[in-house]
Amino acid sequence: MMAIKPREGLSSNSLPQIRYANVCWLCSSLVGIVVAIGCGGVSVGDLGGSNGTQTTRAALGKAIFFDTSLSTPKGMSCGTCHAANKGFADPRPGSTSEGVIAGRFGNRNAPSVQYMAFSPKFDPNGGTNGGAIGGQFWDGRAASLEDQVQGPMLNPLEMNNPSIDAVVAKLKVGPEAKAIKKLYGDTVFDDPAQAFAAMQDAIATFERTPEVSPFTSKFDAYLRGTAHLSDAEARGLALFNGKALCSTCHSSTPLPDGTPPLFTNFTYSNLGLPKNAYNPYYKNPSQFNPLGSNYVDYGLYNTTTRETDKGLFMVPTLRNISVTAPYFHNGIFQSLGEAILFYNTSQLGQVFGPAEVQQNVDTTVMGKLSLSSDEVQDLTTFLQTLTDGYVPKP
Image (cartoon, rainbow, N blue to C red; front, side):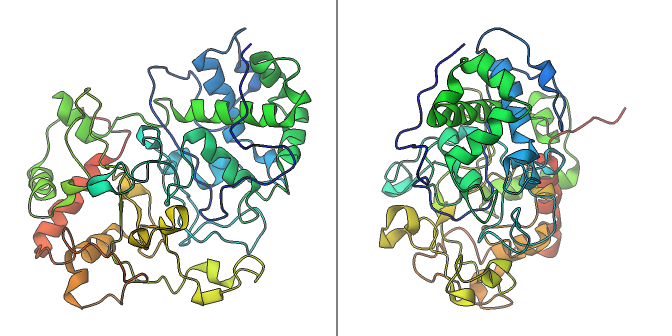
């Protein structure tokens, strides 16, 4: 049994300080444990053990992650927007994700949760040139995995629970209740804040397992010396690290401690993305979006309130990029080819409209790369080697 301290500022009768913004982003990480259960539904009967070992907590966290009884009404889980068979991204079509209430959409694309455990705690001044780094969500407003869990649970555009108490009441009578008490104490449900913190701990522990961050792509096999890149893949890698400037923010080299490359530096940037005119968030009821199509997403600025952060969003990992469309925070591009075209030509005044937020646009690493069509194809081919689940041909 282990005691979990409630997250700072968490009370059972108030909404969290996390703003309603991104749809469902529960994040991931890697630790040296393996959860001996498959993706998808989990039997709580498998949650053995008599103490709070990481493996057992992770199994509980996985069960909660995929539990569709924890929304109001029932029907949505964390896994609804983060499907294991789609790189833990939203498998449903559309630019942004629909919540449990039909017709209510978040303002941002729900990205993959894979490898986000490696994101450091949010630091507004710890990144490049004193900028922000780390945290969770596109705008870093949750400092850690545990903090992030609470947002989607209480967001009316996502799981739509009215309070922490309401979530805990469902947990108390749900299929995971027995395991929660076994791991966190028989009296854990006496204090809703304590029970909610236990749920946060369990989910975050699951998100720190190799099941969520497996490092099993062809590129990983290549780095281990057990696979060879094709000529096109090798040319694409050279472009990635050279002319295309991708590695400026998406490093392809292992970390100093031997961790495989994460293909992100967890910093923030304004790429000059145009407004997505088809974002269904604009059609939300006025109580959730009073500005309608005049809404402007200022990204990191909403967290820091610094003018220099207007329009900045976290640099995402490119791992599993081929299977996690749509792309960018507003889901404006449905194909990888469109996204690469934007990187290649957006500063040339062709094809794309003006930036939604025209302050702080980064023109140093993108927008005028002069990649040929053959080079774009090679780069796309290389990015496909970053998809987990690679199985060598016999």
